[in-house]
Image 1 (cartoon, rainbow, N blue to C red):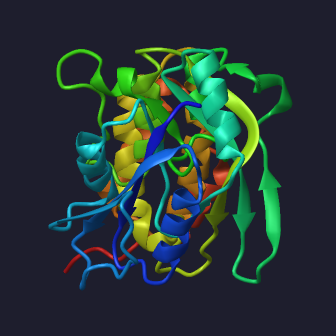
Image 2: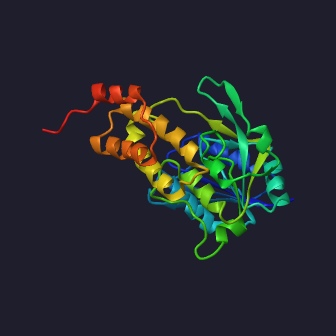
Image 3: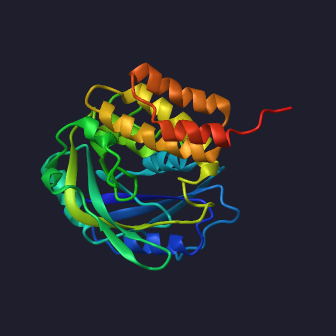
Amino acid sequence: MPRADVIIPTYNAGPLLRRAVGSALALPLVERVIVVDDGSDSPPELDPDPRLTVMRQPNAGPAAARNTGIDASTADWIIFCDADDALLPAIADSLALAEKHRSAACVSGRVEVFPDHSRHDRPAPEDWTGKPLASPGLIFKPIALFGTPGLIISRHAINKSGGGVRFDPTLHHGEDRDFIRRVAEVGPVAVSPALAVEYTKHLSDADNLNAPRHMERRVRNFLTILERHYDAESGPYFRESALWLLNASSKARVSDATWRALTDVFHDRKWKIPLKPRLRRLLRRPPRAA
């Protein structure tokens, strides 16, 4: 059986962290669980275990925390899990698939758990599963598949050339797809039919990354990723995401500079700007500074 280290970044995660750590330690395939505390108000309270390593660093964001965990890992494979999620036993099937295809990475479906405890399965598309992803451009298709929780990466991909592939700590939205896309330049990305991670859905403004207060930075990060990875194949997926951001930004009253930067992409790519977000923007435009 292939072996893996599990990396869990955390910031003031509270009791959910214990569930994430416990789900990883319950897996026979796990060599070590590496928890990287990203400047929490107090150290995480976890039961000692010979396979558990807890590291602390000043707050620098989840991407930087994952990079710290990558640098500390030693197993042939790395599995990522967020502090408020949990790995499911089926992650073993995903790891076996990655090993079989000598993949640089493997992504899996997930089970979404809502605050009312309802559950919703989000499997990978059936025609994609059990084999490497047909093309790297599919990584930008806006579906719930290319996130960090449950993502499996090979040691070969992490160490390939120079300093290796790492998360971009300047990105706070979309850093997972940017990372997977750069890993895809090293080797194939396998798609597992397994539901391998239990993903916690947050509906509050404080935790929901779709909330209006995150929109300025989300647009900036999107534009950075588009500049890096846009091509003819991924273009339709970037356009779909850009349309969502345009509608969300028109509701969130983003600054004039952010609105112009986003609409400039539509002009440059010759994408039509729908009338509805333009009208909404006129009605909800933030007041000018005195």
